[in-house]
Image (tube, rainbow over all chains, first blue to last red; front, side, top):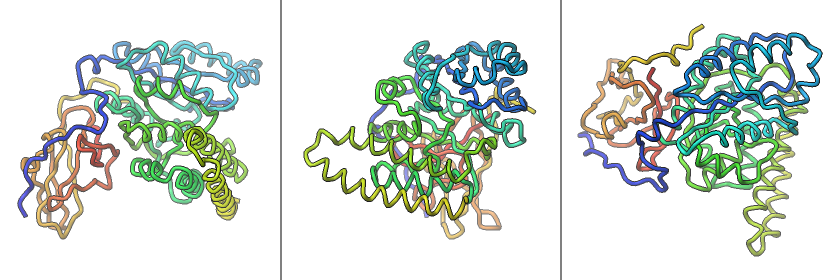
Length: 317
Length: 96
């Protein structure tokens, strides 16, 4: 069979502009989310801040990195000499520290991304870096070497949102939560958008992502949820026909801080449901008859959530 | 450990792509690097029936896809997924 003729590029549904020298000059803003629970072993954090030091040194490419530290973390460790030294000699040396009282991790994101946004400009990209991963392992080091791809993809390919995906096996708790909880609930509340999201990623709650200035401005000005904010951003990106990419950053797991317990898995499903309910109401409450539709979806959602709990109990308990 | 991707990148690098389509009659590679031109990068079928090509790519991130008998096909082993200018799902590769 002969090859088809040259494929002519057609205009995008909604373009955020062509690549330009001005875009190439935009800066990348690294935003580190310091672990809520200070690990006793600093290996992972030391390796992470080696990367942050390198970013801080490349001032033509990267803005001064920011590190968000929850005040609860600070006060829980203020008597800990190792913590104080690491904070002063490593974290503060290579980044600006934002101390904030936060109800949950996504509020730390809000604080960090919001502060970085205020320092940024229209061509800039914001790069969220979670601090509570096992960067000290061989795979974790590979992840550190790949993470930079996320903001670079946003810059080079004019993407509004680039999600970093972590490959896990089918029985990993995150995979189970997303398969039987997150996507099942998304298919109930936002079926069309859920299908679009799954065309990009199996990890709609990933904590690794980069976002362009214009899209971040839009999402910062909307309701920011204390949890599952990546999923909300993905939904918003699909609603608004934004340019989304997904990139594999490796195969790693959280540090053993209890996230994989059955209680935690069920809580993550419950939170996802609460966020989706709120979001659906916000988008539909101006339409007539929304209460009836909401009631039907809520009843279905309860069934989905209960089944997800049963499956997670069977597989994780 | 190495963070080589953060250092000065080489200008171009040869990258191998493989497409598993044993029944296909013709497979080409398209992407930003050849302006999505279906004629410039035909892939070669090897003895094991897999299709292969080596492409010189500049440092950075590139969108690409395979055209299997004229049908745009996503590389299932790609490191990333995005959309091209025609809003079709295509693959992403990073070149350091």
